[in-house]
Image (cartoon, rainbow, N blue to C red):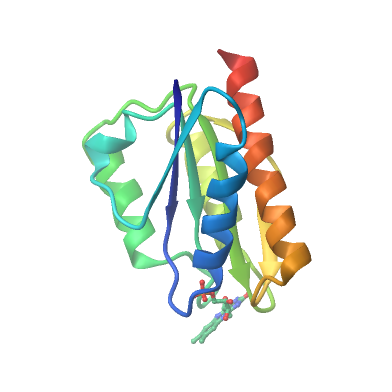
Length: 147
Ligand SMILES: Cc1cc2nc3c(=O)[nH]c(=O)nc-3n(C[C@H](O)[C@H](O)[C@H](O)COP(=O)(O)O)c2cc1C
């Protein structure tokens, strides 16, 4: 089994809805074990083959929790090189946060990132949730092709 972590932060529930649908989509691919979490320790990241981070944009930035995790992982030299990485999130008007995450994944951790990040404005509707499922499925398929 290949393991995908879907890690998210959400203040008002929009990115959480997206994260649940991304996880559902990833689980439809055979050979994939997808785990949805809102907090993990840096060492745990190394246990996964793909890391997908969901973050809303607040004040043109990602959230403190996500920042702390990435900073702590860098400090502890957690090796994520070559792992599949992707990012998504809900936003209101600018939506920079998932892009910032992808930059860190690529430049600091040398992960194999999927671009562009996946964004939904405010609350995902049924079509948005279906797109989230497709996004999760696409990441899972990318992982299966890599192995
Ligand atoms: C105080 C505050 C600041 C925000 N700043 C931004 C911002 O800089 N850029 C943006 O695109 N959206 C911004 N938003 C909108 C949120 O990203 C949006 O409400 C999103 O759906 C929240 O996701 P969540 O429910 O997962 O927390 C802001 C919202 C609030 C309440």
